[in-house]
Length: 416
Image 1 (cartoon, rainbow, N blue to C red):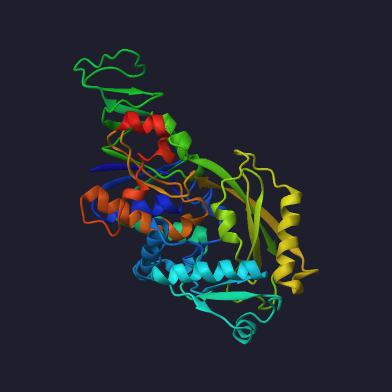
Image 2: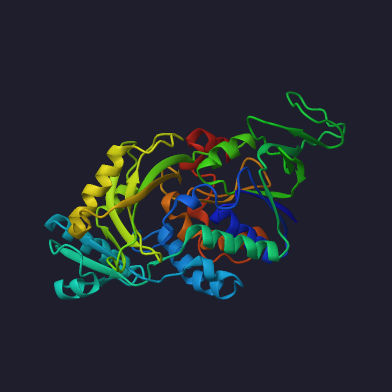
């Protein structure tokens, strides 16, 4: 089976690796380079702490179990910087404490290890953290990787198993089998002849794709995986099967290297609400963690501003203000740089994994928003199982591409 994976970020790299290891002929294409988009602008989080009971948590648990196993089998895993540091979620108000304790209890019922910390245990774990904390929960299974290093390692393993990589290669359109022996078709444009035609289309009609048209020519394919992150909506539209995946902007502050200051991923309990919000306005919540280089990453913000990539000072100021509430000792610390990126947002906050009901041969692996690093390997494993007909590791139904949040209610009725 010939597979084209569109997108060489961490989700595309993970999918390419799984499919290549399963013996499929995989071509990865990206209009930029490997890990050059959303992946390069992430924090590398692999979290179970921020997900309530449900399908996304099950995918997170699968991914967390796969990461160590996969890294053990990679010949060049040093650049991944795997750090199972654990996470600590804190509340700073009585109401926040009640909500955090309730949330943690629901996670425990779903099989997540969530350990309540008293004041002494919290001070020992994070000595520089404010003492104005009303509740704290430790999640030992939270981890971190260097996102570009992780994506590169996964992609390298895919290439080692026979995958091909094409960079600077932009997808333009789709080739489908139109069922007409002479290649004629009302309303079609592009190459003619035989039983297939190459077109850029505005709407899929159920004809199976046989390839894609790119800036480097036509690539034959039996299956195309749309793993283009925030650009997945645009890619799907070019393939004639639009999906509602939108960019959601986030910014991060990076301090100068410091002596050991933050020992876990630490975030305010209101982070979960910020992630789940559908508001287009700024949603900011404190997320603080260190890196192997000694810098401290300070987030997290969310805004829906299209692909406007300008960094806004008011967003950075809000991140800094909230960070000082948790770590007052950071006052006066030099900020070395700030960066921002786009996350693939879906209105119902669930990834899109599986076949598109409107265009046979088109599959999606996208819509992870800010959780793509952590969920990448679980997504890829589930995709490979569905493509090859293996028993899936978890129920794929909640992630199906044909659901209303992805296609819209009218499109869903038509697809059905």
